[in-house]
Image 1: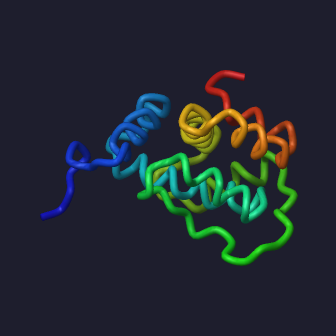
Image 2 (image 1 turned 60 degrees about the vertical axis):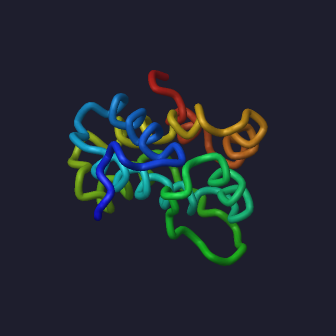
Length: 137
């Protein structure tokens, strides 16, 4: 039997519901999950592998972007490139929705991750990307 949005455990439903509440354009937790994984995959290319692994320890296990699998230098991407990738890689993110979707996911991540881990992640990002971790800059 397939799990429905309300049958998921381990905090997954709570996390995805928070994303949906912040990105009202998403109509289901399935859409929120897809967008979340895309945003996390793009983020995985912007921080170190080690930092992404630490960050993912604080979000539900379901949310597992592919990202990089070997250690290396994170890509230096600006906010426009980040948002363009989110738009291009998500079937639910049309033009104009990349920023609210990225903000919804990253601000939810910020609420779930311990402060020191969040600070370590933010330290690896340019200011324009750090701003996406807040709902309203």
